[in-house]
Image (cartoon, rainbow, N blue to C red; front, side):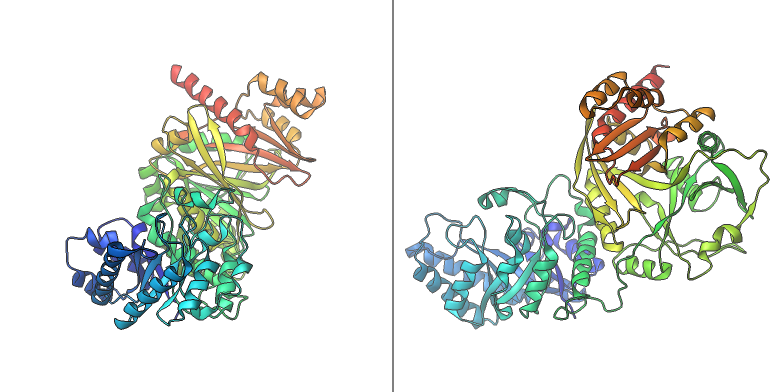
Length: 628
């Protein structure tokens, strides 16, 4: 069985609460951070008993530091500290002691003295049946790399002294995991997995930075895991971070850490025979092939506002639910569901958040396997009573309490519109505006939730992330993280907001939490679509004239193109020969809005350079409405 552990330091609450949360998330072990123990009001035996009752192994006690290279009375004091730690480990039933290489600049750099001290440490650990795992801190005084630590471990040559590896320390300075291939697997006692952005900085300054969960950064953790596994490592895989930040969501760290760790080990184990799969029954990550529908929860007033906007974009009401107050509006491959039921999940979402997107349907190969993977990784499954003639569509809970349903073609699920809905008579056949499909869905959340939802998406689905972008709102900064399936059929933007004064922050405040703030539809011809939208009275966001003066200079655009962009209030971006065009609708309930986009020449971004322009225009519109 794969041993999965997490540091207690990363989980909120008192020590017993931490253990409960860690066990509930699915971990089998813990790294016990000694300050959590020393600050605990109960006894050491209470902790050991609680861990055992929860099925948790105390894999390692940490940290023990500034031990080697001391002289005289200081050396005696360090040995006394060691003996106390070993007594504590025996009482806890902990397997290993994490020994950090000394950061004391006044300690001896004599290799023989360091080896002698760590050999004595190994002897004393062996006497009580424990092991010690030496981890090289990049900012340590003398032993700052894994290979230096390995040399010491091999010179000591004791079964009670080995290495602890941390992927953040090993990879964050641009090093390749391949340099670890010469470390024997039996010398590795403990492995911590932690991610980080791809940054260039002095390794001695690592202690001033924080780590991320596996998959949240840009380090090559799969290679790290693969090489360690090939060397025969059979110990625990642990989630440990260097330091938290104001953007962490400690409340969900245990759940997120379990999800990230299992997803990483599962992904590597599928093509690496030396690494056992953490859960053999876990289905692979899901390949989403498109957005099947987006559902809004509305009342009579907000429903009227929404359908008026849909009409102005040339959507047509094509079907009505056979027994509920639910309508299907359609254009191209875009299905918009308008739900004005007074009971059920949509009504609950309306009561909690006001008018909002309450549900999204994704097309997948196997809906049941999708739910099986998500729930095994800790995502709550969603279900509600199914009426006569209705399909039981597999679903899970998503961002901000929304629901994500899954539609596949192996069952009747893809016939849902024919089974549950009946056609409505059309008063007139409106000409489509050329909206072909959903281009992307933007979800706004608090900064603290952003990494949590990133892990949710990347561990469940085959989606790749772009680098986080800082978007300048006139009243603050919004962080934006883009995700996309390999073919771009499903694109998501996660927007983290803090200041309630920002446009995104106001959406969170007025909608009482995270949710979908805007939906972009894809057009093949933005100018033809713009003309059709104008004919149907679509109200679009007004863009300042200075923007178009700048466009002409920045990109060297011809005057006729700039004029057409200005007339249609269309924003423009270019990367090489690839181009992107955007039209924004006016915000409606709680700051929600629609976007129409066109991609040319393989453009993969989202017009990030235009975001401050769009936000300034939205804030101007907001202030104008307030003044009215």
